[in-house]
Image (cartoon, rainbow, N blue to C red; front, side, top):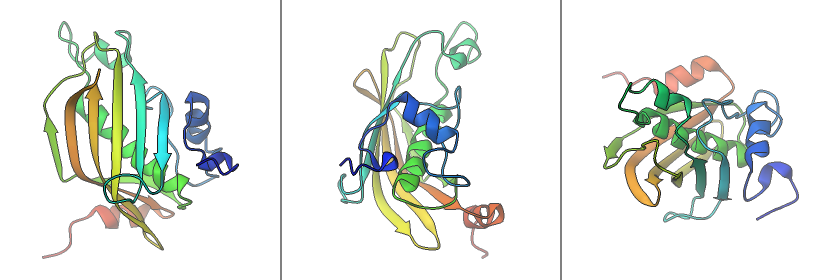
Length: 185
């Protein structure tokens, strides 16, 4: 779905992702991706607002792996492996990007995750990480939030799965903190 709107393309190369990180894609004060080295993918290969099992949207992205990536140098010495939290962050980044792509206003904040199951690792010998996010719920009102499941594959093999991750867009930083806080008992 390429509507002619540069922010509503169906895929994004690294230049498009960097434009998002600089605040040029969705406008000032709205969803941004982090700049490298915290940007955890090189391209979004697919983004739709009606895909996935729930028909709420899906995002696919890829990262080319090479042994010189910054995290292999420090995690761990003589036993390099990509930290699992960086893969989870990539999935959160994708949900926030999706909400901005849908027209949601505000800055993205991760709000939590229900479950993470590791079944593999990203080693420096890997060639490509493929991330997949399937939106289960999308709220586009005063509250802008996405609830999604995700999968991280390394060279085609599932490395981990995530259930019920939540990302919101907020125009007020305090609102983000309040949304993430547990309800009083």
